[in-house]
Length: 445
Ligand code: TRP
Image (cartoon, rainbow, N blue to C red):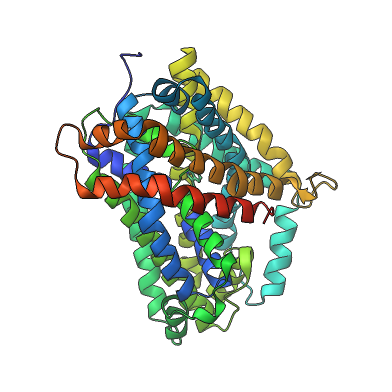
């Protein structure tokens, strides 16, 4: 074993970094529009229930594997389960590259939009005008690529600083900043005339909109938002020391992630409703509907750039964590230096992001199995690779590691009732539910 393995400076540092991983584009860009498309309050309730049962169990499982083995995803599963199970770790490392290939493209847009919002380029209240502007930007050749490159350089610089001095230090500054920005935006949104309708939309459940698809949308959103199913939380857990307690840490991470999603909804929906826009606008909500509302709003010229800065910060702390399993794998198992690994992995991610970005309109024919390259990567990661990784992780901890996992969790103390409940969920509840969702979201069912 690599005896010089790096560790977090403190347990609070771990919580901040893991919350930084969890809170990202998933909370601020994806959650509000997904809730909007799926019935608002009813979706929120289902989402909370899914997080409480599946999110908590899988987060604890991943962090526990990392803490116990002190290894990267591949080495960790090889040690606990042997060679075949280590392939699940490898699947996770590969999933990271697939996720980053589109994540850095969207993150690049958010960087660009800080400038657009500040320069007044977005000062139109007409969603059609803003939609055309958005299409023209994401469909151009160089500009989105350069913003993605800039963002990737920020990620690489942070990660090459190491665990405590790079990742932890960045998160300790950026996470409080993120929550401050979010609270300021919510406070402002709630003072608008007519904001009540937006709050009601988000918090009042309308069960007539609930279907089977609502559940799979909520589950996919929960896993993406909590960074589960690809060894991200496993890797962060491996930088804890072997006997750090996990209960408070995991509950804090989950609470911060849920809080950030709800706050993002409260920052966005009141604004959308107050100015009479459509909350079900889908993926364009952030880049098209919201700027229109900002333009219609007093003080919007300041709120707009702040909002996109918030989004960039959230994306940065998440992108860092998506890269880390690969870094940890190559430094642990191949003995590469961190710097060399970061350079190589960042370059590979950037290469993959080029077709993603160009498939948004700049170049025709960049398609895979009938989708644009960008959508194909998103679909492969979010609907196939992550649910599969999560399913296999649940089966592994529940059935293969089993009693060993309970002992590791209890760490010498008597086994608590909640630890048994946790194992029960991993054995009997999570696998069938994840299988069902997996089959549904891949279109088999
Ligand atoms: N959770 C992040 C978000 O909400 C994205 C993310 C970070 C992620 N690490 C991950 C998603 C690992 C899937 C797997 O934006």
